[in-house]
Length: 440
Image (tube, rainbow, N blue to C red; front, side):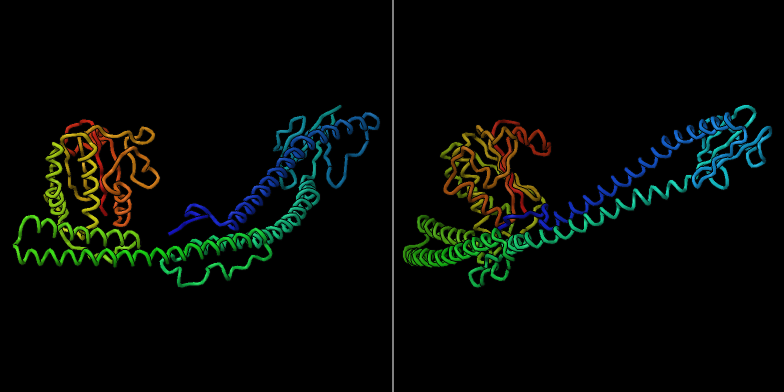
């Protein structure tokens, strides 16, 4: 009956926390991987190239001072030197002066090649050691620090979920209240613990008070509708009995018949209004009938009114119409209110009632109405009943409630717009309004 706090498209607060928590971890992990990769690329592509060029320049300076100066021989850097023809291992390589990558000693390595005074030198950098250093002093400490940081964040996230979880449980309990039997049950919030959360405790107390007040109101409303039902039915039953006695004594006159039909309509109206108040149709008995017959009966009852207004009502029947289960009183009230509004306020001359497979159209050729926000179509609901239309009796609000009870839907259309978008309707395009009732 009520859906406060949460719709189907929304998520509990704890779920939102978890989602953003893991999203944050994923994004930071991705940024770490990208950052380390970029750092390794810079080290290998720029710093190592500069270092090899400087090493080659330094070696030639040493050779200038001492022609027998030894080649560099460290853990990360070693070299080869020859004169004339290159060693067999390098003959397949197209060696070019400068820093390049060649397949040497079983793997692709970064090398620096140079020639000077007939000597040829190839310096080879032990790149695998750099990868180990990047992992040992770059990635491993960063991963450890992130692990410690997110362990703390996970701990505080658990604390936050514990803090906010009472609000989730209160919202779920409110959503699941069965208002049809609320007066016979204890407060649904009684067993929810707030864990010293003052805001949640205040909310729990307010919801318990709200539940108690609303349950008492519903109980009073049910008692009132029961009393009204009894008080209204009793005089109607007495009137109906006296009319039957008059018909037996004085015969079936037109006045008695009209009074008898009016009393039966009043009894159906009382039952229908009580069904609306109780939000159920269990007290009404459906009948299997043709909707066209009920519409025709309703048009016959309104014939005198239509003649006085100088208007003509035409029923366009569906030749393949099948019987359906109908609540007679509610059906008559829905279409009766719509037709009376058309007769009293459309200021037209023709009303067409078009019965199709799963919908009924009531089209007039009157002045029409200005729909909200200059739209050409508008659903009939509680929010948009601010139309400047005067209705018959309880009018459009009753139509909306009855259709909701029956599982139907009502929309208002500008006549010209509807006919321009539905070519299967054989009506002239004039000003006016079309009310469409979509049946279940």
